Image (cartoon, rainbow, N blue to C red):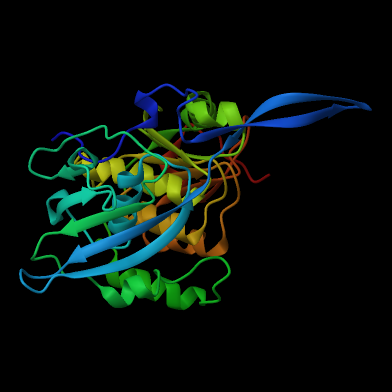
Length: 316
C-alpha cells in the first residue's frame, strides 16, 4: 500500500525554502574577537490536531492536542499520535487528513487514492483527521492526554495500569540483535540527520532492521514528536505492527516513548541517553528489549539481555 500523508524530510533537500529551518544573523565570539555571521535555527511552531468523528448525521469536531513541533511531516505526526494513543488501529480507520483552514483541495488527502508528498506551508498549523463512522473514540483517554508527562505527577503504578487497558496483547519477543550491530546504530542515525547538521537542535528517531539497516528517520524539536512522525509514517504505509524492528532514540527513553514503541509493536528500543525507571518497568512488563546510554564502546541493557548476541559475559 502506498503511503498517504505528509511530505518526508528524507525525500527532499534542505534548502532556503525549507520551513524546518530559519536563518538568523548572530554575533560569533572567539576569545575576545567578535564578528557577525549567519546561523541556522531549528524552527518551532504550534500544531493543533483536530478530530472529526462519530456516526453519519451526528459528527463531532474536537481539538485533542496542541504541540510545539518542527514544521513538516505534520500528517504523520498527527496520525502517529492517534495510533500510539490507541485511537486508530488500522490505516482504513482514517477517512481523510487535511489542513482545514486553507480551502485548497491540493492540501488534503483522501484515503481512497493515497496521495502523497504534500507541500508544507508555514500557515498550516492545524491538521484535521476525519475518522470513519464506525471508529469509537476514547474521549476520556484523550482528555487525560494519555496518563503522564515527566512533570504531571501521576504515579507509575497508575500509568502502567492505564497502559495495560489499551496496549496490544503481549507477544513473545524473538527479535535478536548482534552486539556489533548495536554499536553502529547511533552513527547511522547521526549521519542521516540532515536538519541536525544545519542546526544542532533537533531530536532524531530512527527505525532499523535487526541487521542495522536504517529504514526510516524523522527529526523534531520534540522527542515525542519525532517518534510520532516516524511511527505515523509506518502506520500510513500499512507497515504496523513493527515486529522485528529497532527504534533508536537520540535522547533519553521516557515512559511515553516506551508506550509509543509498545503500541506500534517495536521489539527493541535503544537510546543514546538514560531510561527512566518507569520506562524500564514498561520494557519488563511487556518484554521489550531496552538499551540505554548507547555510546561508541559501551551501553547498558535494562531488559532482554539474552536477545543481544555476541557478548562475552562476566561478573565484573
